[in-house]
Length: 231
Image (cartoon, rainbow, N blue to C red; front, side, top):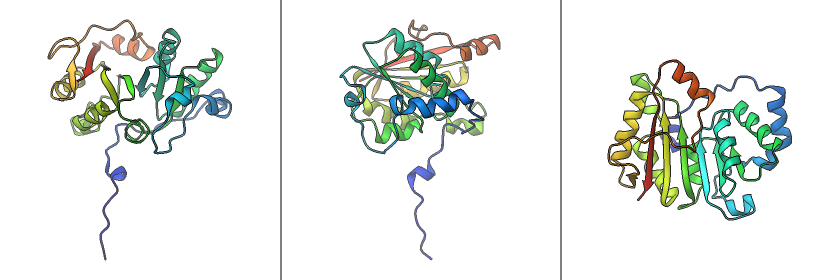
């Protein structure tokens, strides 16, 4: 019998667990009524985002936007830029689409797909002006640390999709993950700390305090922001 190699996409360690639960009727209707407008179906081919948005503008990508609270606020208060959200969990995507539809938003498009695959296959090199990864799953048990999305290979791949000088903004409320993020980013040759070598950033005004963050603060968690520029 001949052994066949396992495809890369089957070998990859996922940084998320699909635990959608049940979507509310309103969230399900959002997919029925609004996906054609706000959603992008994963095709595995590089997208023409100027065509998708009907204009040429700086593109901001938020990976793992959760319930979409921060993405909705940012896109409303920054209309000169376009926003691309990536989230695997259906209820959050549905909730955000309802919010966007209510205000007739024109500068947001969404993926419901694995962010690593979107970056690899749908985002052309030098496309992104900014990337945001706020409060990703910390995978705090030591045996699960390898599942954290912020790893050397991932940030190297992300750098290829950023325009020169593009900004990467990370945030977490787990100190051990903050230290891991700092270690990975300081060692990444394609990135330069926007504050100073080895330093965290003050919370920028553009990152609002979300329900998730408030819950963490009530539990006594700190919050760490990191800002890096693509070299």
